[in-house]
Image (cartoon, rainbow, N blue to C red; front, side, top):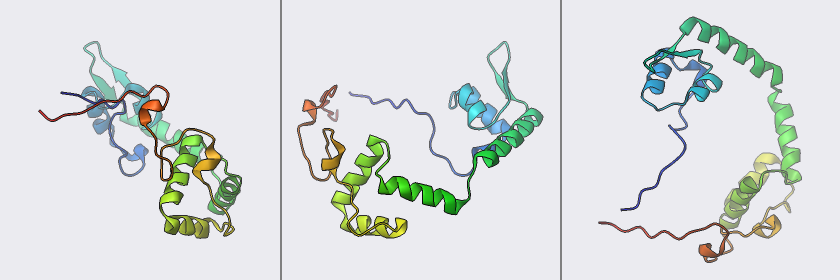
Amino acid sequence: MTCTFNYLRGGPGFGDPLEREPQAIAADLNQGFLLPEYAQKVYGAVIAQDTKGRWTVDADKTALRRKEIREERLARSAPTLQWMDDERKKILDKQAAIPVKHMYATSFGLSSKFLDEFRTFWSLPEEWNLTEDELGIPSYGSKYRMDLSLMPDVRTVVQVEE
């Protein structure tokens, strides 16, 4: 039997992580669902571990840390219209990480409706497009099909039911 392991823990969740109850964070830590680094960085939790390895979250200190995080967020925030204008410029110039551009290029190649809606949402010119040809990397997407074993560091795995 073949097993696949995911290095990510948990799911995307709903809502602001700063709203998660401190006792729920402690429970996640103690069950091994959450790494201490993420309890601090993502949830703003002030944590401690006792000599038996049991985690606790200091609710009062966590509330103060979360207030600081919210103030930090406000300090680096921008009005929505300004952010959208900045993002539109990046889109026009096709400035994004290769995986993001690949995702969009293959999606546009699969759905002209999606491309049209994307152009409309971002007020892009009708001739604007992003294609797999522009990426300059081996691609497996909407247009290109290839033997994936030809890509670097790819190993074919055959899964069977037992």
